[in-house]
Length: 482
Ligand code: ATR
Image (cartoon, rainbow, N blue to C red; front, side, top):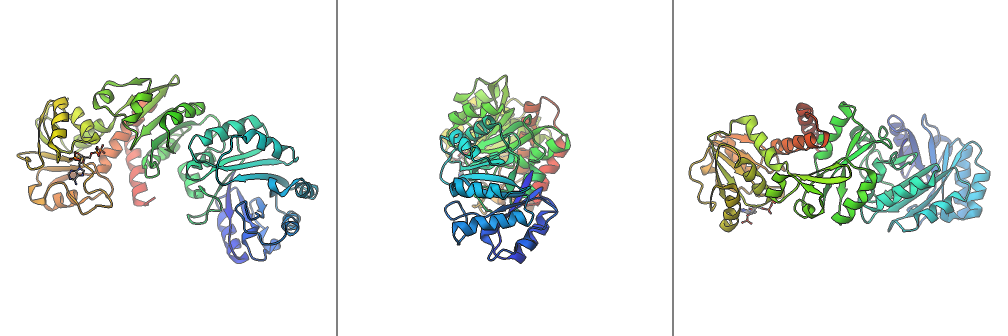
């Protein structure tokens, strides 16, 4: 059940939101504490079940009156037909018993909130809530580390009761999406950004349309992008629509990771199928893997992990992604290719292209670094002034990336042939814009992003990727500016 939380100042505004929410949500939580003089008769009148909540201050609420008034309003809400009422554990046994005594057909949620941490004693808290005789246990605690979700998951699993167990904050997002895997009976979301009633809530559109949270279950296989930050990852838009279309019981998440070793060991409890790895972990991850594919070992970086028989196997699809993006436009054979840059991306791309029948030259601001990777790729190198003759120029630096959109690694007058950029934010970089003005053919960074993702899919699933579907999903997300 996906529940939309509604927290508005006036009855009219709340009712407007309820009408909108009942079109898409399975249940609606009305935060009575946010509404000045709530009109229960009008508010508790929906086609969807209503959860009446009247939060006190200190538990993230705004209720101004006395405790007695607070509980009375909940009892009134039940009398007006609310299917659920939420009361905080901290309200005390007496208040909780009073509400339970008046519940009639409604179901009582007894809730615990911790806005600073996910405490060690989750089991003890769950037992304490359970002992109140409530119908549903709710425990919501702030995640300071992504692995706090795993502790929450384990505690919820053990409880064996009707439970809502979630972690709050950005790092708790996965517990909200995976609520069914966590054994929770519902998850909370919002109608639009900015309407959060607790930290880390995401919109019901993302919850339902992108992650299909209500369709996931205990068997759902988990994949995700490991990074810091992970929030800018576009992989969620590339993979989740494919899982939906192909009816695969899988989900791609974002893992905001602070401690890679701890994360990789804890996440195994959820039996994940694989990971994408992004900045800053592509190199650090190597020492945590059980096996490393030869290309990734040679490049010295991993952007893909396949989990097989509980073993972590590392691959690198960045180089092959660039290669496929080029091959979509032209043949590699016999081409003179100039790679600009000598960082991780340049390393991956030059290693893969060095296996092809083309001539490579690596140019970098710091020539020493170009020399190092040119040695591995067995090719020429130089400074940014050594452009010489080329058919294809490939920018592997971050120059031109937002917010430095006006920058470009190579002056316009030198551009010719095919110009490719691995930067995809913005899609039309200054380099590509100027290349077009010089009547060059261009290959944008989205093509490489797509193709490295296609290769990841191939590794994770072991089957031929639905290329057009992935392309369509990625472009759709870009046009929707999510
Ligand atoms: P990644 O691993 O993502 O490729 P990186 O390792 O930080 O990123 O590499 C960045 C590359 O962009 C380097 O080749 C860097 O040049 P230096 O080796 O001289 O540092 C290049 N780069 C970054 N900013 C640049 C700039 N303003 N002009 C030219 N090259 C630049």
